[in-house]
Amino acid sequence: MNEISSSKPEGQAMISMAGVDKWYGAFQALKDINISVGKGEKIVLCGPSGSGKSTLIRCINHLETYQKGEIRVGDIVLGHQAKSIDAVRREVGMVFQQFNLFPHLTVLENCMLAPMRALRLSKVEAESRARQLLERVRISEQADKYPAQLSGGQQQRVAIARALCMRPQVMLFDEPTSALDPEMVKEVLDTMIALAEEGMTMICVTHEMGFARQVADRVIFMASGAVVEQAPPAEFFSDPKHERTRKFLGEILGRH
Amino acid sequence: MGRDEIIFLLIGLKWTIALSIVGFVCGCIAGLFIALARTSGVRVVEGLTAGYIAVFQGTPLLMQLFVVYYGLALIGIKVDAWLAVAVGLTLHASAYLGEIWRGAIEAVPQGQTEASKALALSYSSRMKDIILPQALRISLPATIGFLVQLIKGTSLASIVGFTELTRAGNIISNQIFQPLTVFGIVGILYFIMCCPLTIYGAHLERKFAAQAR
Ligand SMILES: Nc1ncnc2c1ncn2[C@@H]1O[C@H](COP(=O)(O)OP(=O)(O)O)[C@@H](O)[C@H]1O
Ligand SMILES: [Mg+2]
Image 1 (cartoon, chains in turn cyan, green):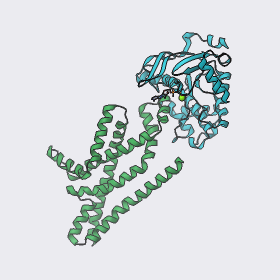
Image 2 (cartoon, chains in turn brown, purple; image 1 turned 60 degrees about the vertical axis):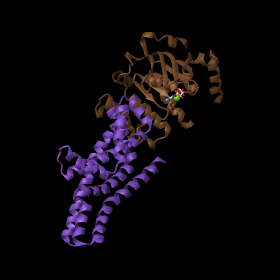
Image 3 (cartoon, rainbow over the protein chains, first blue to last red; image 1 turned 90 degrees about the horizontal axis):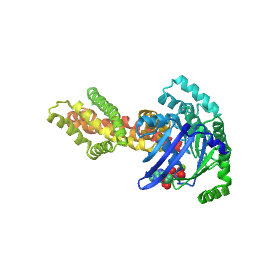
Image 4 (tube, rainbow over the protein chains, first blue to last red; image 1 turned 180 degrees about the vertical axis):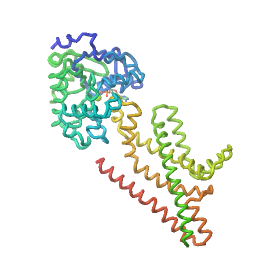
């Protein structure tokens, strides 16, 4: 497993965070984050609640600002000006715990809007792209329904398709299965696995350790706003180095 | 009470409707900008619009109409009563609608803004395509409620000498000395305008409440 991460040379980093610090007022939510994610690499980010996982991935597409350090996506340096933020957001798709589909638009319209507005695609192009991706997440027969008419698992698959319609280079997932009923977790994970197999660069915040074992190239463990440990999944689960990692794994694996 | 009197009342009614429409439509347009400014995230702009809203919500409409009517005359701008009242009602409506819609914009879940941003939508697209359609829906019952208040509020235009429905009623009543009949009819005309709106507003409120469940 080790050779997977070493086969991604530094120069090809799809995402890099260097010395990133973030404060909410006086509270430091991220402490000196240094992460480099290669093209096509799949990262699972885990850690106790409140450890800063969401904050970290939300900095990558500038849903949160950060006060120190540098973030790059591809060759774009994410500054605080609108231009670089827009450029990054066109390359980075995000899937949220609560789906955040647009309730007043149909499934198809949800998928067509951003390509038309942000990429200036024609309606025809946007629709064919949307239908193609809804097909890919196996939900094309629901295209004309409204989000509220779908199950949670279906909604989350639409949210994935919606993000993919931008043809992003990177996908960020923030606990995509945490709000789902247990019987719907698998359909969403299967969609994510398929995406991983197609070579998408992914950062997934998740506590689905089966998913981590199956698709992750690297597992990153965070606690109290800092990266504590990172390793390929086999090593991470069998031989965690830090006490906090062991404690966390004990809790999370013991629970299942 | 004869045919001529009825026609005179109906002409007054026409002006009441015209004032309501102008006040509401212009108030909606100005109110939209007030609401957007109020939620812009820019401190100074938010503060200024908060002040604007406070002034117009904190003073009587009658006084606002006086100030516009006589105030504009004082600084040398000659306007007729119609324009002064239209401007006054627009300012008044923009403040109330701005505040109603500010609340509605803020009631749209934060996740909608985040998803829009993550999809690289611009501010204008985020507002036009995502936030405002949802906010409008949320605010519809309150907006209709305000429209009803505004229709009744146009009666204050009579104070600055504008002959809308209430003033028309007053004039007729002074001519034929049948205040009960005349104002009874005037009341019925207001009721016919406002009651369907009130019922429609209540209907929407129930419908949205049912959907939210
Ligand atoms: N908007 C905010 N204001 C203040 N503190 C926040 C805010 N958002 C998150 N935090 C704090 O930052 C820490 C990290 O939060 P988060 O990134 O959401 O953690 P995780 O996703 O790992 O559960 C938590 O302690 C949380 O309370
Ligand atoms: Mg989180």
